[in-house]
Image 1 (cartoon, one colour):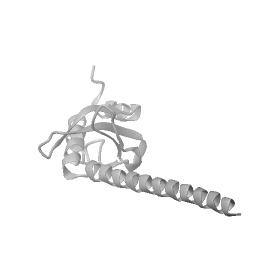
Image 2: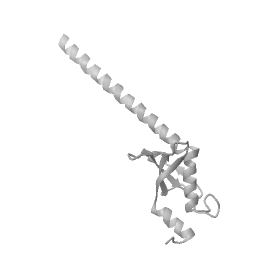
Image 3: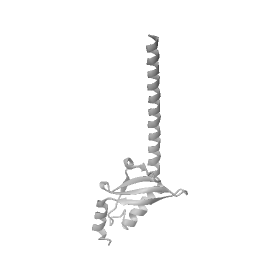
Image 4: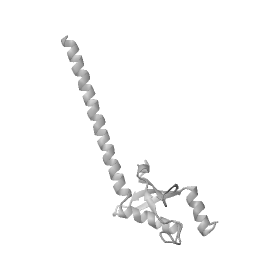
Length: 134
């Protein structure tokens, strides 16, 4: 009987340690996600998005442009293994029209993007407004 109690205590102890480890991991993941959201929605990051969008649509955020709003897709946030934070912004509330950024910290409180990606619908919409850019 005492041997069974020792085994039971050992198994319970192992289960508790595993639970604590998993709980700590979950808390760490939540903190990282919150940090990514803070970066992606910061004033400095918004400047990167808006500069790019205004470059692609000189009339952006006006009645004459095809881009009138954007929203950071918080579910898309992820760290790039090569560096930076990968962010997708949804244009005009249309999930099929988005632009991807790889935010890089410039070390002086500002950000830049190492590259940009755009959905086909973004380019098709741009071509409707401004014609082909061949």
